[in-house]
Image 1 (cartoon, one colour):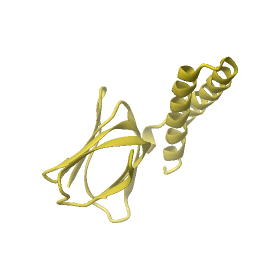
Image 2: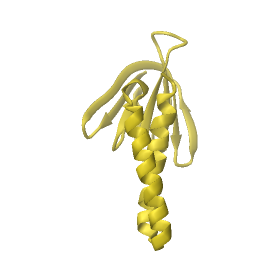
Image 3: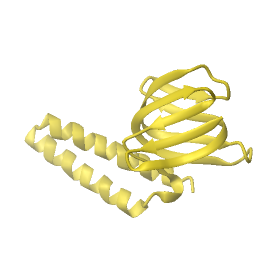
Amino acid sequence: MMVNVVTPGGLVYEHHATVVVAKTIDGEIGILPKHAPIIAPLAIDEVRVRRADADTHVDWIAVNGGIMEVRDNVVSIIADSAERERDIDVSRAERAKQRAEEKIREAKAQHDIDQLRRAEISLHRAMNRIKVSKHR
């Protein structure tokens, strides 16, 4: 099956695969070739793709939400942002994590629920990128 990951910036990933594992908002899902058609909202998490060209080769992609559509042996992931493990700038992700933690402290001190939610999402995204980068 073909796997495509697309963001507003363009195509991030495209390969043939034997298995795709992603986390939806309802839990983890595994996709095998000839899977029934589905559309599922994705959580901020990693997507694992076992490539068809090598049984032991797994690509890891940090996906910041979005949707996954499976149809006609094609897995399409459309996300606000996504990065392959090899493309993640770890120092930038660490700085984003620190900024988000500071914003969380400020939001709690000010009792600003909206800012707190946004900061928690930013923290989750940064931590996801850091986690995925460790699969290099």
